[in-house]
Image 1 (cartoon, each protein chain N blue to C red):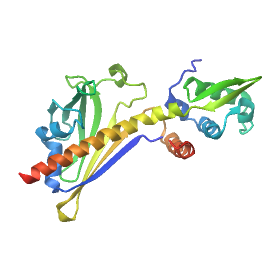
Image 2: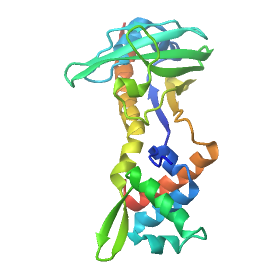
Image 3: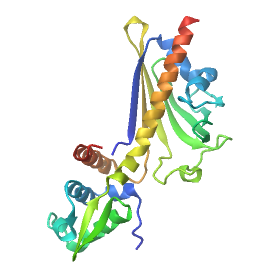
Length: 106
Length: 158
């Protein structure tokens, strides 16, 4: 099975969003994350794998435990499109404003 | 996760002039390129079903010619303009964003709605809404996602 997914597919799943929310407040082990869900442990592991592959979360080995961290950089990357478009339009609206002032003075 | 972008501005100008900004190619050339950009090409076919082609470029920012096409789906004079925006090549043929070097999650079809409203004192309010189609995600998932990311943004001060 191909587990490489795009970010949007990764966050389209409610369980994965719930995991992201949990990890947004603190780093946790897979066991601690699974304890928050009724689903089977392998299902949670699969979600963690998908989220890791999209770089929405990172893994860190601490002794015998693996901790998962939320990666806010990736989230900024997905919201990037909206911000870029907004900046472009702000610039265009400024141009329009100048243009309309010119039209008025004619 | 925001997938809509809304910008709005009140112009000190009558609605007729603001409308002209969208229908007159010579005027479009003067605003489609924001600061530090120019718009060398604006071929405008301003009617429902018509396709306009615009280009923006910035030598200063090292941003090469970027063509977009607008396919008009609805035009209500002095009220609203709706069109689908796509990235295109210089011949005005729709291109996949990935082929133009955009990230894989860059939206293909961007539904755009421009709304005009006449205000007192000959002022005009204009709103532009861009609604990107990111495909594959259901409406329901999007709703949940928006809530989720709003919360996250609060937590992380993004």
